[in-house]
Length: 73
Image 1: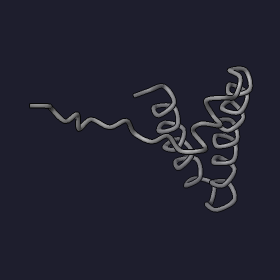
Image 2: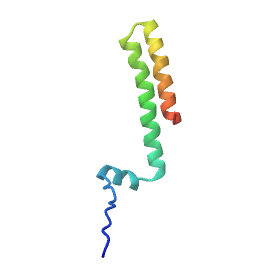
Image 3: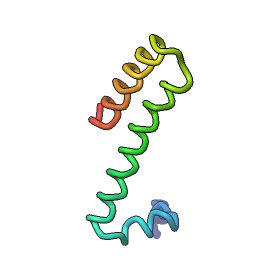
Image 4: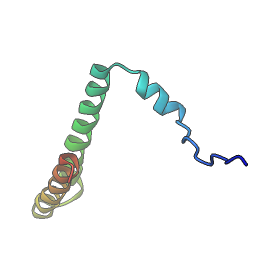
Protein backbone atom coordinates (compact mmCIF):
# COMPACT_ATOMS: atom_id res chain seq x y z
CA UNK A 1 0.00 0.00 0.00
CA UNK A 2 1.05 3.52 -0.64
CA UNK A 3 0.26 6.52 1.48
CA UNK A 4 -0.96 9.74 -0.02
CA UNK A 5 0.71 12.90 1.22
CA UNK A 6 -2.06 15.43 1.74
CA UNK A 7 0.12 18.27 2.98
CA UNK A 8 0.23 21.18 0.60
CA UNK A 9 2.40 24.23 0.55
CA UNK A 10 0.50 27.52 0.64
CA UNK A 11 0.69 29.51 -2.55
CA UNK A 12 2.57 32.79 -2.29
CA UNK A 13 0.92 35.77 -3.94
CA UNK A 14 2.66 37.84 -6.56
CA UNK A 15 3.03 40.79 -4.20
CA UNK A 16 4.71 38.57 -1.59
CA UNK A 17 7.15 37.29 -4.22
CA UNK A 18 8.07 40.85 -5.20
CA UNK A 19 8.48 41.81 -1.53
CA UNK A 20 10.81 38.84 -0.94
CA UNK A 21 13.03 39.86 -3.85
CA UNK A 22 13.58 43.42 -2.63
CA UNK A 23 16.85 44.23 -0.86
CA UNK A 24 16.66 44.48 2.92
CA UNK A 25 17.57 48.19 3.02
CA UNK A 26 14.83 49.06 0.56
CA UNK A 27 12.29 47.06 2.59
CA UNK A 28 13.41 48.83 5.77
CA UNK A 29 13.09 52.26 4.12
CA UNK A 30 9.60 51.46 2.83
CA UNK A 31 8.43 50.17 6.22
CA UNK A 32 9.82 53.18 8.13
CA UNK A 33 8.17 55.53 5.64
CA UNK A 34 4.83 53.75 5.91
CA UNK A 35 4.93 53.65 9.71
CA UNK A 36 5.86 57.34 9.86
CA UNK A 37 3.11 58.38 7.47
CA UNK A 38 0.49 56.43 9.42
CA UNK A 39 1.63 57.95 12.71
CA UNK A 40 1.95 61.55 11.55
CA UNK A 41 -1.20 61.71 9.44
CA UNK A 42 -3.33 59.95 12.02
CA UNK A 43 -2.59 62.63 14.57
CA UNK A 44 -3.34 65.52 12.22
CA UNK A 45 -6.76 64.06 11.38
CA UNK A 46 -7.79 64.42 15.02
CA UNK A 47 -6.83 68.11 15.09
CA UNK A 48 -8.94 68.83 12.02
CA UNK A 49 -11.96 66.65 12.79
CA UNK A 50 -12.44 67.23 16.53
CA UNK A 51 -12.51 70.23 18.87
CA UNK A 52 -9.45 70.74 21.06
CA UNK A 53 -10.21 68.81 24.26
CA UNK A 54 -11.59 65.82 22.36
CA UNK A 55 -8.73 65.81 19.87
CA UNK A 56 -6.16 65.54 22.66
CA UNK A 57 -7.97 62.59 24.22
CA UNK A 58 -8.36 60.91 20.82
CA UNK A 59 -4.67 61.48 20.07
CA UNK A 60 -3.64 59.88 23.36
CA UNK A 61 -5.77 56.82 22.65
CA UNK A 62 -4.48 56.62 19.06
CA UNK A 63 -0.84 56.93 20.13
CA UNK A 64 -1.31 54.34 22.85
CA UNK A 65 -2.65 51.74 20.39
CA UNK A 66 -0.07 52.79 17.76
CA UNK A 67 2.71 52.26 20.30
CA UNK A 68 1.28 48.92 21.50
CA UNK A 69 0.85 47.63 17.95
CA UNK A 70 4.33 48.53 16.73
CA UNK A 71 5.99 47.36 19.94
CA UNK A 72 4.62 43.87 19.29
CA UNK A 73 2.11 43.74 22.13
